[in-house]
Length: 57
Image (cartoon, rainbow, N blue to C red; front, side):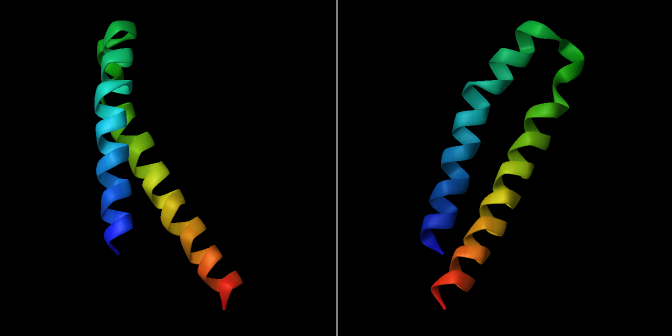
């Protein structure tokens, strides 16, 4: 559980500093996108981790 929290914080920091700045320069209307990608990647992480658990069983 702890590594999932750590991963989420890492992704949050990564997107906050890279994507927000990046999209800010491109388009002001693009602000909602980073959050969308962040949620997508976190969900993907959970999905993959579930698959790995099933394989390990």
